[in-house]
Structures are given as structure tokens and as C-alpha cells.
Image (cartoon, rainbow, N blue to C red; front, top):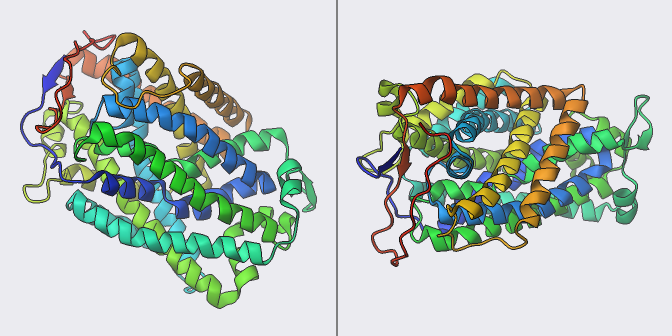
Length: 478
């Protein structure tokens, strides 16, 4: 069943540039380089450069998937709505569960990562309490106007980019090894501490973490009901965030790998990026960059809270929960036009997840990203056939070759995760369990109740008229 827009609505007041700024902040080069990339380095050593480059190449294809679906379906729900309208409600709720867990995981992951950088200037900083305080603050900010948050995140983003440039410059100033050699012959610390060739399995596991480092450009689709002219602007919001993110992330990763004095010690370190900054820049430079990175990660947390609130709000608007929870989570602030109650709930989830280890959090979200990419790619193929994407103003090239490549890569990353006996397997099994729970929730609860219905937002009043398209019923609906 499909319902038309009604009741409280999000406020459409943001420009496409503002949407891209928040999307780039959600991608967060700082989280990519200073939280996710250390895990990639620990898992695969100098292969981190190739892993991130491959993530960018895959991202160019995935961005096309996001652009076509997001332009056709400008909806606040983001990934889960795009997947649901093309693959059906069971896949919809499987993916919704990844968002409702993955976004609080990202908040916790970011909050815990902040203290690692504050330690450079404040050695005794408490890790978990710092993360909790940061999550509380960004959650409150996320409940305010999305336009105000675009200004806040934009100001912090400048500082973030400067920190990335400084890190890349430190590496370039201490160039110690041939770039082609570390790319073609990746190495990492072996069991005895000496360098060894990076195993293929380690490369595969690192690939999932690298995807998380570059992930976030698809967050633009969550603002489809708040950007003026969203259908036409979605493509450059997504590609703009990806290209700028890649241009900001890859140089520091190269700088760290080629500029580190000892690659074996770097890949065996619990804090490889902080060690590099101290080694290459000294205490003062390392302190300035580290504080800047901590502020940038805090900034990214604001964007995560914004997107998370809109996902939960969208689900409540479609009667996905109990009547009381639905009424609570679909509340929109009268002044700010924001889904404030849903945003606060996402923040509360982030507080609880701060108790999990950092590597497990990275691999959980890396697995979520891999699986979601595969589902989105399958969705764009199905959407072309059913006509759901017929109104898109951003038809992706290389169809269906591009989506097929994404599906194969996603399957390969899932296989690599299962083969890994460490955090990779744990993260993947948690991800699959969360998705299975979401699918079962739809089949055993929502489908039987008959209360759930997809919410179809109204079009912009000033939008150019477009030909009417018959709504294709979602497969599996009663």
C-alpha cells in the first residue's frame, strides 16, 4: 500500500551545495584517514594505498547507482527506500536494519576515535566518556535546522581539509620509498615483526574497511525532501562528494606509507597515524593536526546524526513500529523543520554502542557497506525493468555492466570477511544477523499486521511538470 504525503513535513530550504557539503562531511575524510585507514594498515600494511584507490574506482560506479535511484526517488529514507521500491519490502527492511544499527555504530566509532587524537595533547583523556559527551552534543545539534547545520559543517570542513593537506605534506617531506614499489609489492608486519608480502586474504578483508573509509557520498539521497530541485541536483551532490572525498583522502594515505620510517612497525602499531605524525612532525605539529582531526571527526558526527534521524523518521512515517513509537519518531520541530525525536533516538543508540571494540565497529560498518552496495546495484537493474527509475534525471552509464561489477565485488568482500577468523568474520556475521532480523521483522510482524505502507512524498510545488508514471506495486506486498 502507498500513502500520499500528509501531516508534518520536512522543510525544503537547502541548496544543492549545502547538501553536498553535509554529504562530504558525512563521508568525512578525517574519519576515513584517521579512523578507518589505520585498521586497513593494520590488516594489510602498504596495500592500504591500493585498497583505497580500488574503493574510489568502485565508488565511481556505485555513485552512478545512487544518482539514478536518488534522482528517481527523492526520499528522506535513503538507501532502504531505494532498495525497497526496487527489490521489495523484505529487502527494504533488511537494509533498514543496517541503517538503524550502522548509523549509531558510526557515531560510536567516530566518538571513540576522537580520544585517540586528543591523547597527543591530553594523554589522560578518558576514551568512553569523551565519546559519550561528543555524541550528546552532536545529537542536540542534529536536531536543529538542517540549513544551520550545513553552515556549521561547512566551517569545520575547511579545517578538516587543511589537516589532510598537512598530513600529506608531512609524508611528501619525508619521502623514504618508491611509490610504485609499495603499490606493486605490498608488505606488512609478519608474526615475528619483520616485513612480509601482504597475503591475498588480508587484502580482501582490508577492502571492506577501505570501502567504509570512502563511504558516505550516498548520504545525499537522505536529503531528497529538503534540497530545492533535488531531482536535478542529486547527481552532482553525490559525485561531487565522492570526488572531493577521494582527492582529500588518497594523498594523506600515500604520504603516511611512503614517509613512515619503518613499515613493519607502522602496520603493527595500535595507532599508526598518530605514530607517523609524531615521527614526521614532532610533538607540536602532531598536536595541532591531531586536534584539527578531532574537531573534524566531531563535525562528521553531526552529519551522521542528521542522516540517521531522517532514516528513523522516514520509517516511522510509514508505520514501521508500534503506534506510540511511530507518533514519537515522526515528530518534526515546528521551528527548525527537523525530525528531532528520531535524531535523539539515533544518538541514544550511539551511546550504547560505545562499549564495543573499535576494530569490530569498523568491520561491522564495512560489512554493512559491502552488502548495501550489492543490494543497491541489484535495485537499479530491477528499477530499470519495472519502470521505478523512469523519472530519474541521472541515468547511470555502463548499465547493466556497472551494477554487475558492484554485485561481484560485494560478493567477493563478503566471502573474504567470512574467511577471516578475526574482526572481519565477527563484523560480517553481526551484519548478516542484523539484516536477517530486519527481514524477519517485516515477514512475521509488519506483513501480518497490514499497518505498514510506503509513504510517497509530494513533489516540489515549483518543480517542472513531468509525465505521470504509473506506480509499480512493490513485490511481496499483501
